[in-house]
Length: 331
Figure 1 (cartoon, rainbow, N blue to C red):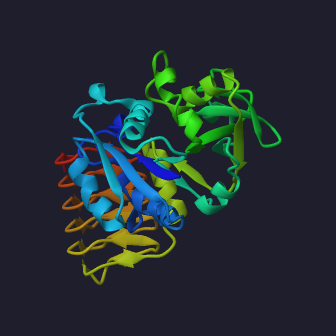
Figure 2: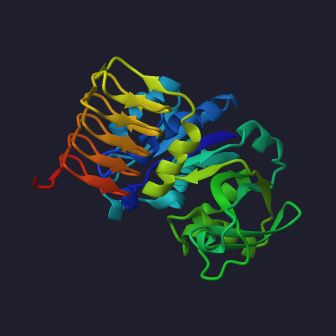
């Protein structure tokens, strides 16, 4: 069995934050999404690969070297050129050969152990299934109906979901199923594995479900990203910083080296502040602030602010600010 981590998307739903940063490498606390995935993959002792694109190759290469895993690079630079998840899986099989594959979406944060997941594998396609508990939310995902642990129906992004159980982007595809990708791609959706699963069921291929219940986040939106931060950030991690005696830190937070917390500022809870930021007379909570950003006389809540921004005299709530932006309200 081989492990394939799919990180070839351009994450357009999180633009402008992910315009130059791959989603799998976004920080969640002091680690990236990919670090959380690799912690679980490393327990398996299996041959592993990251599938990405030419545009983000340089970002992933240090991680591939750090974890001693392979890098498969599709020759695309833009969203409209991408192979899609299924196209990228086909390319991986062409290069690595047919085998059983554990396939993991690179924007997934999940609570279960991959060792436990693989213990449920018996040669049939296996998918990880989570109850989102809301029919409206289920419309965004692949919806599953089960009899015991057997999948009897699978609908990708249905308008009227019949269940709140959804497929979460962690799969085991047996060798014979990987061998059918080319047949599927002759007339199938190249991007979402959900349509492939739907097609497999229609072709009589058995699919088994592994249910888990603690937490799962598909980092496809600012809300899910910030919720993941609140779930996974348990302890503060504060590097060498300068902090005013009149400022206050409410844990848990991550504050990277070189940052200055000046004046009467309140940082936290659930704040990530990147390297060499300046926060002066400002409150920042439930937010991610990337490196070298300056925030003065402002309140930031449930927002993501990219690198090298300047924010002054503002109250930002549920906002997404692209890199190098300068925003201020007049006195």
